[in-house]
Amino acid sequence: MNIYVGNLSYDATDDDLREAFESYGTVDTANVIRDHYSGRSRGFGFVEMPDQGEAEAAIAGLDGQDIVGRPVKVNEARPRPPRGERRGGGGGGRDDDDDRGRW
Image 1: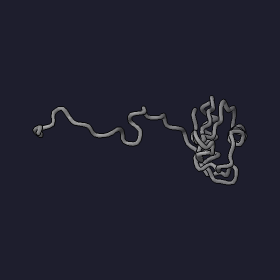
Image 2: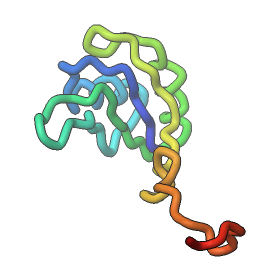
Image 3: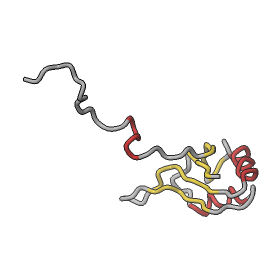
């Protein structure tokens, strides 16, 4: 299961995430998401746990708990929407069935 971890301290590392979640079971990956240009943490991350039961226990046990000094929000990650559908989609454009006449 892919798990979202929000409200992370900007000082939190991948190892901090891994350590917190390993107390609930096996962790495949633990990644703090970083800004592409500055390298600074964006305040959230993802943890991948292969066992559904362990992942659900980690979510229940860690949601609202402190990791590196901040209470984190932990829940199952939602799949990313396709690129064109993010943030409300793209711009307008003209509908072929537009009733307005051309100039």
